[in-house]
Length: 77
Image (cartoon, rainbow, N blue to C red; front, side, top):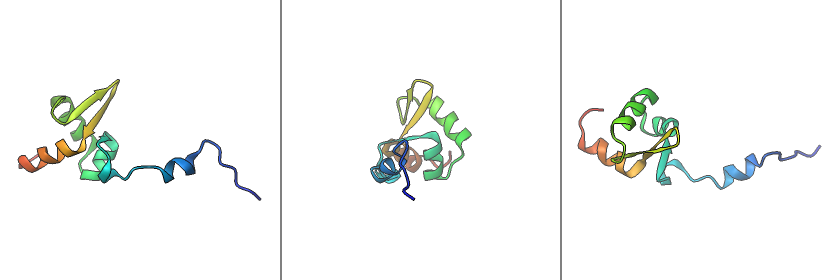
């Protein structure tokens, strides 16, 4: 039997950019990448809009390079 590709899932996974090369990460992706809880990331993102987080509609996005600098400069999160 032939396997049909409905929705293009296999094609999108081939073109997906690895997390360490993305400029912005969702809260779930950032939590997996930095090993920080999603609730903690949401609180940090709410307090630091413009520094390392961006609000896009009702979602928060973490700017990965700026968040890495934030983690280096702060001794606790």
